Length: 341
Image 1 (spheres, rainbow, N blue to C red):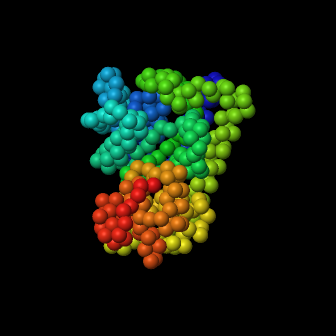
Image 2: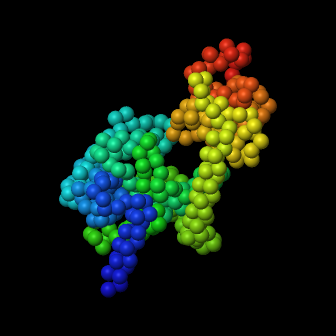
Image 3: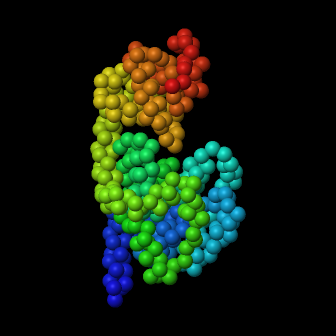
């Protein structure tokens, strides 16, 4: 009887969670990023149960980084066939062999997910991030000295490569999803990398009890991460308002009025980030330390200088941002070589 009660409570919470991410039974198609692991298999089953299998499409990306990848892709497709869910499989044709392979794999996966979602007629694609992912990411970034943006909990509703990204399971723990899978007799794959201690996320996961005993409870840390999400959204709203005040676009490029340097440093950093990404789109902005150095250069008018694939030049109206590929034109204009921050 206890199991049935818990199951019913979990089902009710799932329905409420889908509503918070605007997922509704309206004949729209929603894509699911399906690795085959426990979290994503739970999400697939929940969505196919609530929306119907014809309103769900599974997107599986084969990273081609392990020998088992091909057979796992076949297994995932078989599970989708049993549910009556269409499964679209993509593969990393030229997987990275050096550098930050995890980061490169993530970028390749999200590029595939966004493109495949469009091709399959998806309203949005859903990923199975849980409360555990929020907590682990918070701790990892805390160790790197991240600011508010890095420490803030993941957005429930975001965007990736021009496609809406939904995270309906952020209020659920990994264990709750495992309980759901057991109760519904759903199979899933175990990724061996989840036990590999060379990854910081795995080491943090293994120290959960130690954190709890030290008074750093999961609920309190998650509350902090979600509080920072609210603060981040307020700061970003203010940055957008100031962007309209200080930024201008013309045929030359993006210009920031010099008076933006009178704003609080946090706003300066955000406006500089926006200018860089508007000029030279990238997956992420240069790290804070680099942007602080650029702000110092701008305050001293020690320009031109380059950062994030952009060159920043002083003008009568403020600071002009151009793609670095336009450096030759800038050199002719200012008569000086640029230096990289």
